[in-house]
Amino acid sequence: MLPELDDIQVEKVNQRESENKANKRAVNVDMNPMVDLAFLLLTFFMLATTFSKPQAMELLIPAKPKEELAEKEMAVKESKTVSLVLLASEVKWYRGITDPDAQSLPYAELEPLLTSLNENTEGLVVLIKPLESSSYGNLVDVLDALNYSNIQRYAISELSPFDLDMEVQTEADE
Amino acid sequence: MPRLRSIKKLPKLDMNPMVDMAFLLVTFFMMTTTFKADMPAEIVIPFSKAELKIPDKDLCMITIDKEGRVFLGLDNKFDRKQMLGYVAQQNGLQLSVDDAERFSLLSSFGVPLEELTAFVSLEKTERKLYPQSGIPTNVNNDQLRNWLIGSRLANPNLRFAINGDQETPVYAVKRVFDILQDLNITRFNLITDTEKDAS
Image 1 (cartoon, rainbow over the protein chains, first blue to last red):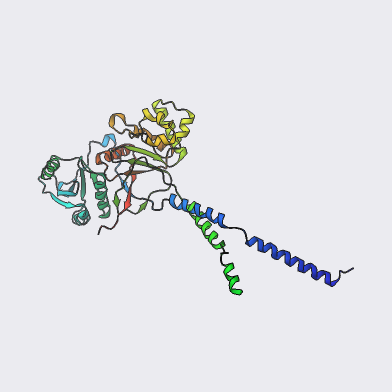
Image 2: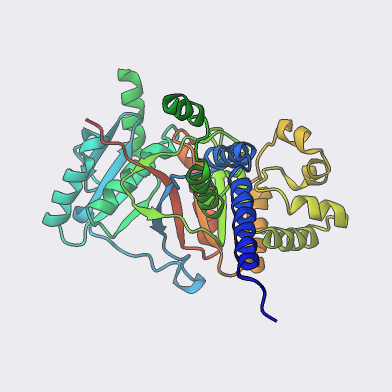
């Protein structure tokens, strides 16, 4: 037996009404607490994040010489060495070791100097001579300049008597 | 009448796009976040033009502050525990399992071995106030060397980074260089900040 046509229509209308009601209710969910929470988390993570990761400079130091080779030190021509003495606000630099003629230079101008020296001298060796009073920042400045002027051979070395004299002199000047 | 109705409807803003966006951002930040490790000492890192990123993992950070105090930090909890195991064994140090666990939660530390047990057993807030004197590096009492050997044994892929203050005396840094060289660690990173254009 088929149902009457009128009955079917009535059922359909009823269905639609109930669907509509359900939809309306779903839209009316109060979103505010959720938004509050979301923004709270957002603020927290934004503040806790470290965005700018610090950069790093790679440094290669020579391996420790083996026992049997320790005495066979590498000989370098004096004329090919450049010494940099790290003072607080400037660098004293000179070529050679005996009877040097030292000149001073601010840290910012170190790189062009080293680049030109490197181009003019084959097998240049740079000796970095930090004073007792030098800071790590000075050293990093110099290493940075060395990296950027493509100088491969450099060493952190001890102070010679001449350097020590110079230190005493600059202190006296100040 | 139609006007009145439209005014009544106004407060019902559709929040969904805003929620979508907020959660999108939350997810983004949650994924990308790396929490700031609390630094034992204030470090003003020097500037350079270097553009290398420091590695994310397998990192051993040697921090040297203005006064030349040395701190050591590993990024991995299990490595820290193993490192402690080695050092404790070498020096005949007795540490309880609890203390070892607490040590492995420290992102960095800078106390001599003699003070280690006391330092580790402190509460978190007290630990922050504890005057850490740095890991000894002098020739007669070279504890940093042991820690470094331990860290290397714990994780052979470890990369070393030196985090020094601009005003750290060079000889303190040189000493650490020498220890690293002695241990045949010849490649390491100096942590620097990108140079601001000095103009």
